Length: 366
Image (tube, rainbow, N blue to C red; front, side, top):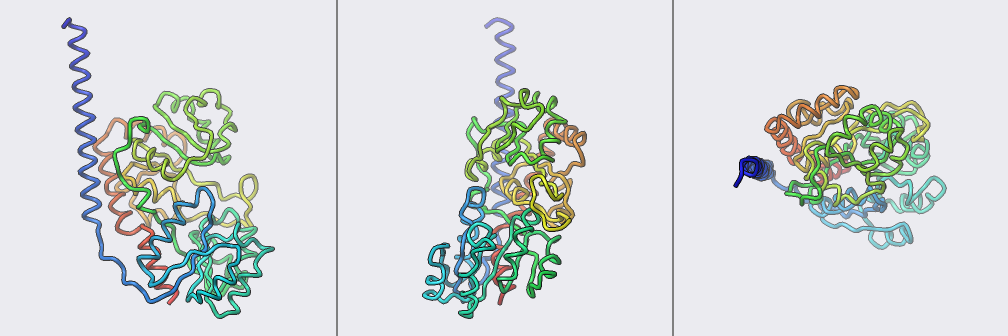
């Protein structure tokens, strides 16, 4: 073997050893986090629950997570549908009917079934998980339900102003059957990943750091990324269509860093906001990425500090320059990156799974 070949062999051997060591370290740390975070299952409440899913792409992991969690927490769970719901409810006679979002299943001009079900004496509950972005419509829906839940703390007072008597803040959570740590195949391995729709504030941020991102092994997925001014530069890294939650979990596990950037809470453009409602609470991606045991770089929402400890369980950035600096830092400080990700995984499994949320929801309603 000549000198160049020997050097190449040694370099490859060292790289393989390093990659194997860190993959094994992550596997072991994830297993520890999963084992150490196991808590007793919540007590099963003697309740009959009728659940009405959102039933659209982007919400299917939330729907399935809620259904599975309800089955662990309630004595009897039925999954209903928009068509013939009144007849279903009359036959099942649930203690609670829980509707997710309701914007597509029972929009403002199709609430007759909900009103009729209330008249049967069944407690109707709606959980808005897309606030504050569609509040121009949700404020019309909310008064038709006995109880209003919202994942966005900033909109609680808005619904009370609409005459809703029982309004509660209930954060989202991870479906840990989908978003969980595992060793992803090589085609999902990236340095930096972002999955989500190209809302205008996201376009502005990505445009501003396009040059730096283009030098990384990058994966971006979602609709409307052709809005980018630097689209020709980033086009090779962009998957232009929405991907399933199951596929997203593969990319989250395969990536070293996942960027999270919330939608802007400003009315207009991408949002249909009733009033200037501040976005205070974190989005579902916050929990999903952490549940995969991957480092997340997220912009800051007020409620983040009650959910995770920045710098220990999650990492934050304030603006484009800091985001680039932290990407560079954590890609060269692997052990620190992995340790933060593991603490985030542990916190998520202890406090932010759908089972935990559904137990809180049912206790709140009884």
